Length: 202
Length: 75
Image (cartoon, rainbow over all chains, first blue to last red; front, side, top):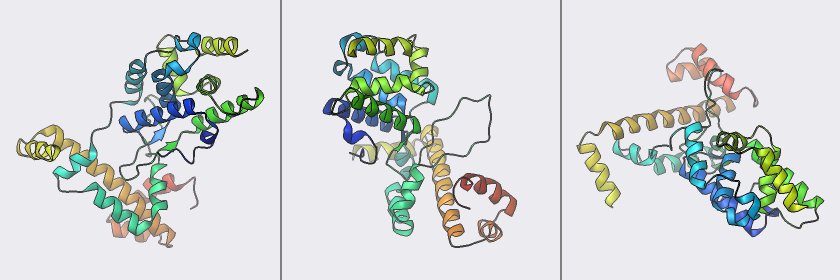
């Protein structure tokens, strides 16, 4: 699984890793080429049994998170490889040709690419910064923040590893994370979650 | 290969959904290949003028599209 390279993932315990894997799967399923806080939220909602019961009951259901993601970020991406095959193009072939010519590094760079869009403040922000050729996921900057916060907190409480509750803690700390917007849209106040977590963990 | 048969059916039935998706995917693929080739050309020291000539567009349009994208990295 492609989680190496996520700093902080090596500090996750098994339960938190399970959440991360489910987050990655949801990002793939939606055709995104990055891992965002919203995917982590989905992972947590799906594996809510790994969270303290009082906090778990506050999270919206996993499929609600998913449809909230879809409504903000757009429909799951069409199956490009199949569509291209109908016009006689083998995406795998193109990919290996690119790999031969420009090397693995070029593909990795494509995974990080953002589609250039003129600044249009009246538009919803588009998160579909994906690449057909690259398969690996880039890490959204706010996910890095989440892991940083979570690992700092684990240190502070002298836990050896990050647990799922730590991840959720990290998410609600990153104010402008999309995950928090999704929570608010579903009538959940991230501050309530933070307080519940504090109560539970103190 | 059930999926492949389905695809052939889709082509045969002239399904616009699949046809349009193929066009959109082609366009995305084209953009990515263009980025790769332009980056490569710049890395090899090509001028925007030379790149534009090879792409068959004006220097301004290449510059507008790719210089901004590449802006935050090296030139």
